[in-house]
Length: 264
Ligand SMILES: [Zn+2]
Image (cartoon, rainbow, N blue to C red):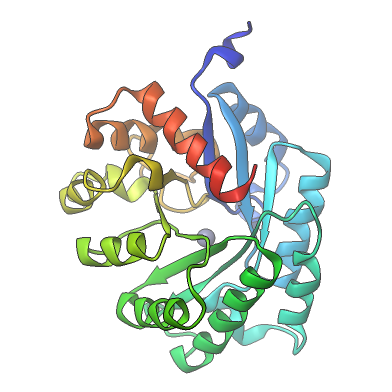
């Protein structure tokens, strides 16, 4: 067995490798990810163009599993048929998830009244394709949970994940009750974020995922740097400490969860 095979397996469930900050370096980044035990990386699309690039790169690199969607903050500058392009890409058998979608009331580039119809279309596409939904939330937990609850009451559970979770315990429990997974990013490693660690400690082990959200949200000890999938091991280490588990157990549990949710 090589060193790589003996490492606990990791899945980074959220990375943006088509970001311009990675241009020309993706092969090296993938090699570094494999060297820390990475078995899959979800590459998450934000526009039709970005989603298509995620899919095309995944055709060439089996480590990568693509998700296709329209990020709520990117809805302003898209072609009229943007969602139709996403729906067409979503039919490709390589695509494992729908998103990222969600709600964002932080950047104020797109009003929530424009984001909500897009979220609803992504939820319907997730149900139609049977592929789980990847949900973004920033400063919009109340309207997002209301949308998810209304959808749940009308249509029953949808498979999916609240990515880079940073809500409160009540929101976590509401999401869990609807059957959703929670994915933790480098935010959980920040010194001032004990509240988030306390929440993570109360999440059932079989609903936890880890992610980088590369190139954003680098975990300690890389804070302030460009993030990359290999750094997800620091987030997994912190999550292990929150739950009182050894790192290999946490890595295996989050990997099992990612494989179950995304059918990897
Ligand atoms: Zn993202």
